Length: 399
Image (cartoon, rainbow, N blue to C red; front, side, top):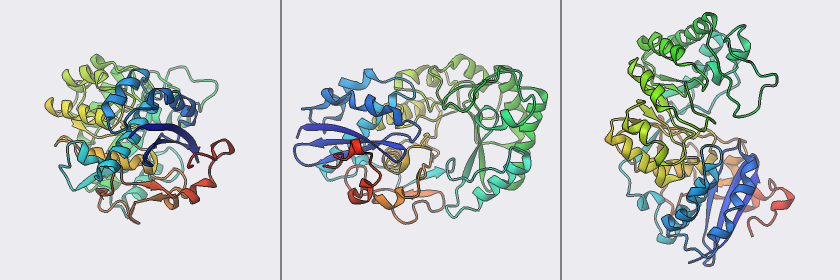
């Protein structure tokens, strides 16, 4: 079997990758909905793929892996890898998880960081109402995640929240705002945590997406202040998101200063860039994204290495879309006992639920998802339903 074409089309908000072969099999991958600009970067790899056997996944990846980087550009390499596993599973007639070592669990646990409504504001009562709505969802999520500080509108809504430089024009995706947090800002965050915990109690766990952008003394002070609330973790306080470096030394100092678990990793590309973070036990939880880290096999390697160093695993995935959900389900079925849950990606537009084939009507039950047993990643696209969402330049995508 040989690859004959690599295609990429933006469907809705997502760049979708389609690898075509001379035997009629094809593989699909999906980039986060925030990254429509990556389409030409995906297509840049076409010449490297043409003529290769897609079932030799690692051999193909050796040709392109070095051309990726930290978020967002590692996504182009990562979703090509997803599409290769999709083809390999279809060719073998088995789910992709069988080719990644086989399942160690029959269901995968997920948490809610994406199914949410627009908050009415940034006051403690607004946060309390928001987590109440999330708690009462039919999916019965065991854990919810909320953005605070630099990962929310709080920094703009609260007067003098921090003493850093505020951008003249806000809203550019991936821009990092940072600075020393004021006493007013600190107390406001703490009040929001207290309000959310009063609603959730010990029935639903709470994690906080915090930044990046904190100064280390503030991060230490806040992590200690919330210890008694038994949070699942504090995420990306120092670096993370679109920051193209890790700073493991500072993370280690933060981790050693508190009993509150510290989490990072969604932006990191390749196992090599997790090495120091893991081997120095600089954090308690890591959250690589299979659509950014270099792919499913890369994420599995990172998880195994973390397991050997007693670090927990909670993969990122909030914007990966429903095809990206297939990649998350398959790889997380194979992960070791340090796996907590992955961040469930909801549909970026409601009509995605109508054009993705292979998902049950109710995907999440009691915070768990059944494995997908169809060959490959287990999902497909309804071509006729999807065509209406293609741009003119992409009309031949499904041919």
